[in-house]
Length: 477
Image (cartoon, rainbow, N blue to C red; front, side, top):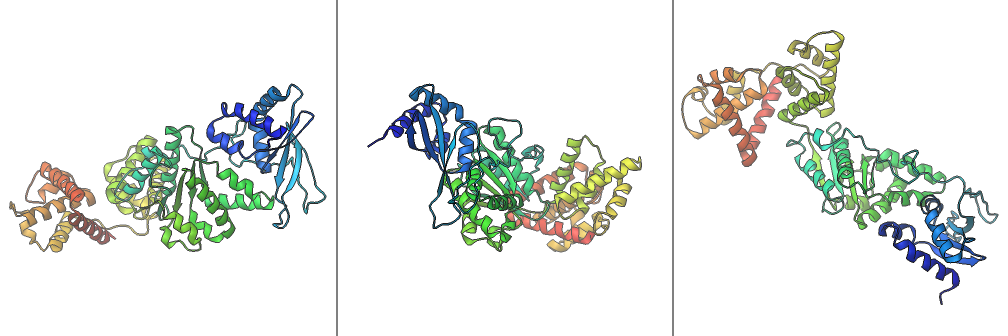
């Protein structure tokens, strides 16, 4: 049989349903239980301190209006807050709190004092806003337009674009992006977040490092507010966790993240994780978490190739309004081998030296700066060295490379040699052509384009070219 308080609450909910978004209604009103009605004071039970504070901050006016409509102008609201006693043998402690403001309470039967006016704060709230709005913690500079696509990152970047267009609605959930230091994991992860915010302004997006997540978990644990912590993260639509490999030293944080992961995934929300190695190689992370990491797509980032490094440098220069001789750009791209971060660092060092010394940027300055920046200066590679290397690789006589023959193996070796000469030397197209029996620059352009096209369509051909690129790079060390 429905009692008086339940009848009043049901009537209130019928009004609230038509005003509040369905998802918010399910999250914030369905868990509430009416437990008493006396002298026009309705008492409702809420599951936690965090829940009480959120209702008071965001829905108190709505509750007041609906309650006065049912009970009259003198209607009032009180809360009964369920508080974990910290002992699994004891039942949750119930605390009654008047609506419209926080108070301090304690309970003699509790093992610890409860302070209602010391609420658990949303760690990402934007100051000055009355409505709860989570700061996504995203760097606005990290967008897809500034993330150059190449063979080193194509799968991850395109998967990221797909996720951003349909967060939580693809098979890429979670999307795990892995790779070494300085290869752009954070940039790509945040680019996805920024794109989601652009395309889906109603989505709640949050980027957080694993270390910050762990520190927040520890802080909430000290305040006996782990449930509030988990509940907060379960409100996120697109959750981005950076460097999840650091969970290996935080067993209890893994337990909390497991609960958060399950809730978000089952609710159709999107998870994006970054790590320095593929999930199967993560040590110290619970197997139940690793199995969930493998539910979606794991995409790796590799060291960018020579052409991608040039594009990255040119994009950086364009964004900063800088100009630099092409030969200098090629020199930096060729000599900085490890990662994108070092590539950009070399560019910044060169610009700094140019500015401080009031000197134009040229190849000599680049060599001087990079001598202190990279492990060893590279030897100059000549067209002759490349020609002989390609001839040895394909077992083609050197003199045949210069003759006008249409034999497929000779033509292909000549085209690859021109492609490598353009990529690894500072010679003009005209000079390269002259080294191949006096051919003109249009032949060099055609050869380079043919090599690029074949690399996109012929796997074995691409492997041969990549292997030769590596040989040339080693020869320059």
